[in-house]
Image (cartoon, rainbow, N blue to C red):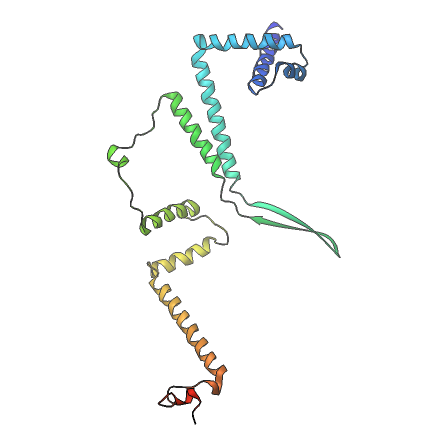
Length: 241
């Protein structure tokens, strides 16, 4: 019975300390826990003394406990990242002559990068606690400057697209599915650099331009004057007989 009372006492003191770390005043803590303010003051003093002496005899257990907390946070961050990639459902309520109607729709989500930053923070903190130093950039690489050009921008775009679509098999994104990817891959194998598609687009634009010019000539009819029908001199433009 005494052991259980001591556990309850320690739990109350830890809660008092937690609220104090959140900026609560002693009066607010006393009102929240329904205990006298002098008890709050005594609990804070006891907990400060406990944490001051704690590393002397139980540092290894504290280190293990903190590593377990980091593992838990990392697990939750990974779960939140996966949830942020799931389709998001939204509903719109409209009122009309026929009454209220609800329309639901699904939207693709590409993941919230904040959760990945939290995972990276957990990894760094764990490495710091177990004494693993992050890899150092070699001096020759640290001084290397990447040239800014179209090719560099293209490679940055490639990395972004690789993060979006992943590697084979590509994950469905938006309206694209596995069957669409097969068609696009076959098209790429036939024309790796897109020359055929570029020429096809250029021919289509030229064809559309010719059609527009022909239609314009038909609309003007007799008003259009060709070079063969025009007089040799400029007298017709000046109104001379």
